[in-house]
Image (tube, rainbow, N blue to C red; front, side, top):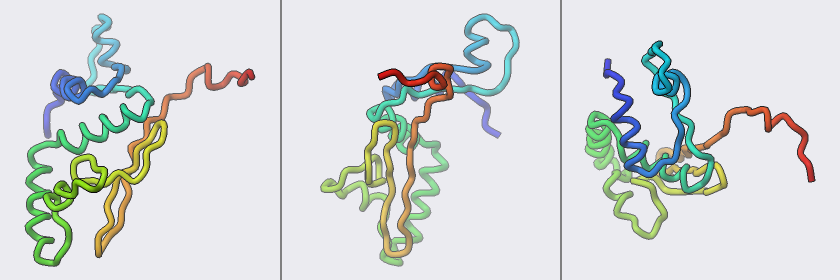
Length: 141
């Protein structure tokens, strides 16, 4: 099991310019609460550019073993004529985050994916805010 390293996780979010706030137990600990848990909760800001940065961080800042699995996948599928991650990254005519094509951008969401001979898929990165008291009050025009 990998040990949680909150400082490393937060540093990578900052390095990818993802805007967020720390919530939950770590936030309480940072404020002086002596109880500690092993969880780290962050809440990203709900804007499209932040969804894109969060998607880029999650896809391009992956663990080494994920990179090994992608390399293995590329080796296995190349013989079947399927697209490799390198071929997808080299497609500069298509809007991409890492090797995933961008299919749609909305205010709080970006949809990535790919179409291939054997599989079409979509992966949404959706930033949803938690329910707040303000969300329950009637809208005024």
